[in-house]
Length: 231
Image 1 (spheres, rainbow, N blue to C red):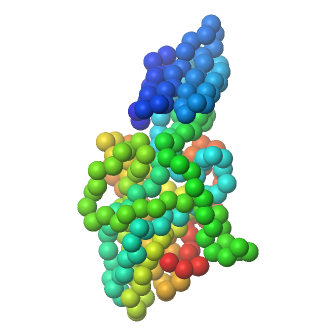
Image 2: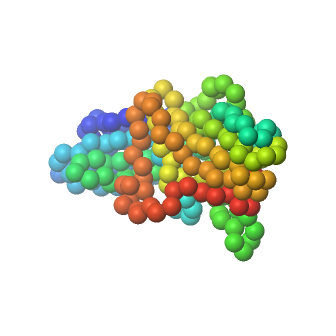
Image 3: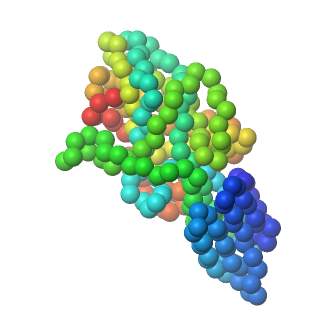
């Protein structure tokens, strides 16, 4: 499904999902049918390509937050002054983009349920997209249209054992790559039992997805995130 298409040849499907672009006189019509919902949009263009990308998982059902909280199914303890490289999953959202001199977001959809949670207290906490994941030591087999994989490097920079139950990320810094798999890379720097810094890394794999905050021309000042309400 992921990749670049000529507009007159665009047609994709998965389970009960189907989308295509049809010519209608001087216009094109984008039609998407999914879970008893039908979307139709008109396109006026003579020369445009269609790009289907996995994107940052915070756009659905509407933009509410740019934070993703991944709760681990089992907590993990990390030795003082040590680091570990593990793998966790993240939910995939898929964008259909029109690419010419500029980029237009035509549609965004997902094959997973959308959930949210609050990180922190009710006064100062932040709303996050919520996801649960097992912790893997090796690359698991996944449905790559539903779940992507984050290579997670955890550094315990404190002088004590620390236990992590979750990780919170600002996904405006997220780099997603796709080929046979959908992958990203992130880090957690544990500073104390309540504070950690998180962020994303560049990697070399397949094709790099369009970052939607760039397509939306959103100015980004702060990309790293400090978890200050516990691990």
